[in-house]
Amino acid sequence: MENPLRLKSLNHISILCRSLEESLDFYLNVLGFFPIRRPGSFDFEGAWLFNYGIGIHLLQSEDPDSMPKIGHINPKHNHISFQCESMATVEKKLKDMKIEYVKSRVEEGGIYVDQLFFHDPDGSMIEICNCDNLPVIPLAGDTRRSCSLVKCNFQQQAQQQQQQQIQQAVQMTQQQQVTCLSSVHLKEDYLPCA
Image (cartoon, rainbow, N blue to C red):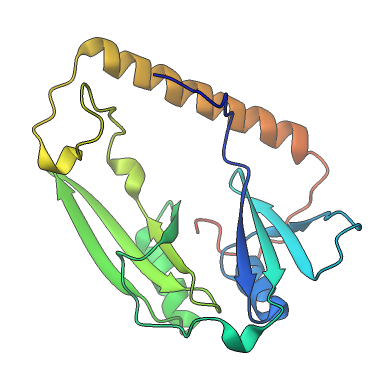
């Protein structure tokens, strides 16, 4: 497998906000992110958040009224996805917080993945799932074709390579958490599996 740009990991995603305060409240109190230092040299409003090995950068829109209207919840729209420990707990919390969501279930070879989709205050789609039930298996041969369109037969070597990559990613994430989060104290009142 090639890595032409020599990428190491996903660092952050940026989200344009109608209201920085509302979005900050959502990402802190619904999804369990915590604020981190943001460079003071920026000349625009925003906030940096971190958790689960990824950063979220919230950016206040200069023209909130021109942002697209929030539509219906469509799992096929662009979204970010978080794995959780308990789908039942997530669903109960979303109900308690009166957050509208759509449920979905995917089945592949007898393995079931449950999904909950909902919007943040600006209409960005969020998915919570138990996607770790479904193994990540690299495609062999023509990677331009979707696995759902072809019968995938994989060599043992490809599966071993995939397992090694997963182990390396887990080790990198654990090392980053130890390095970056040793002095962070988290509040206990956030949704821990979202």
